[in-house]
Length: 231
View (cartoon, rainbow, N blue to C red):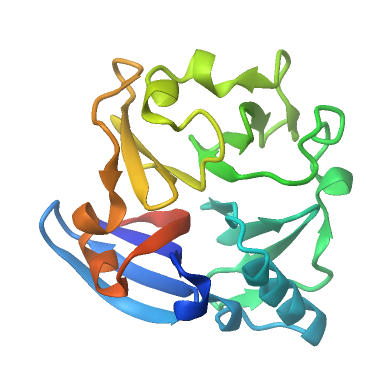
């Protein structure tokens, strides 16, 4: 199966160049074809206000939490206390955005997750995890609310993350398949083995093991999302 993968990366030295929005097809562990490499702030088309939103997100130097919802074909990007919803197929920002995270994601404000989110992990069709600092929450897309008992501490509930230095400030998080999830921070990543509920690799350099990103040079992965698989 071929995975459609989208990544946003920034040079380790911001002044060195544009943030990259890269689309690539992952065919196997050794074969991946890069198809698009554009400046992220210019990819999604919208109103002047919406384009300024993307420019501000890039200028902040922070990660850009992203969530793709397969049933709707929409991708969400978060920055500060606001977010935008885009149509992935047309690369356009939907009308009426940006909007307030606290106003449109019920329950996040009450637990302090209505701004400054570091990353989002899409787990399945109804469940996403949002990470901020040392904590995370589980959000149910079907009930549109935060599950009871959250926030929780990353170090306690994600075994191996503290030892790897990934117990806070996670830039990007993606569930790759039924067995593996990858967390990215600065210029490194770790792999989480889902069946055994533990990390099974020490931190590695991202550009050394994710082949399509190697040509970008030393960089930090700020977001990653999958839009599904094609045969």
